[in-house]
Image (cartoon, rainbow, N blue to C red; front, side):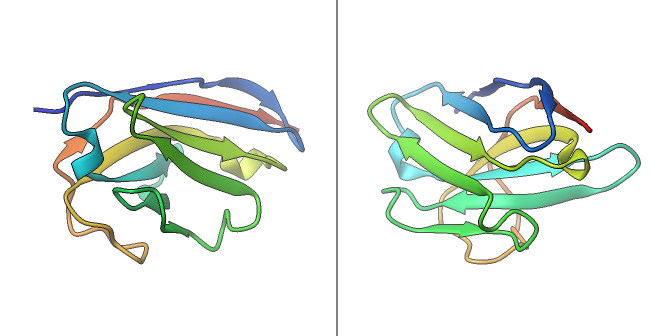
Length: 124
């Protein structure tokens, strides 16, 4: 079992940076590719970014490419999402997820584990 706990959500100014963290329990974190997703009010869950088990490969959605960065520290069992140049349309609940293999695309064929989400609100 892996438990994922996101943190770092809050109210942020448009144009500014903000970072999220997702801490995983257990000793198997490095065996999972990790992803960030988000869900805005009234919309479906949207893929944001993914990172391979080693951290050597990443994939970002077109909507955040050039503004967001995903990284991980396997020694700390944590995956990060650094968000820059935030826009009001980035307002959403952000979730992290874990699956055994990396997906190079926006369509994840399921995830083994999900966090509970953290709210990010971007004010204009």
